[in-house]
Image (cartoon, rainbow, N blue to C red; front, side, top):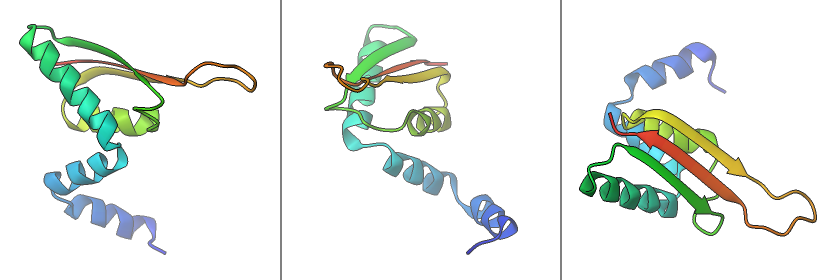
Length: 102
């Protein structure tokens, strides 16, 4: 197992492209495509704030992974929250993603 120093050295040696690739692999293709589509719509409408809610059939990714990817891509004011149904509740899990184009 790697010790903390070895792990830190590996992170420092990673290129920005490798870091982005690693982050993209942590977020599903469906989620990335939905985000990309929403970003393009916002740019076309001259909007800087993006607010998207994805249902469970599109996004089951961890909030932290989505937040890390958007942060690495340079977006600001990132907020990612998921609404999980409780036991015996009958509604679809959703993930709400809000961020801003700088």
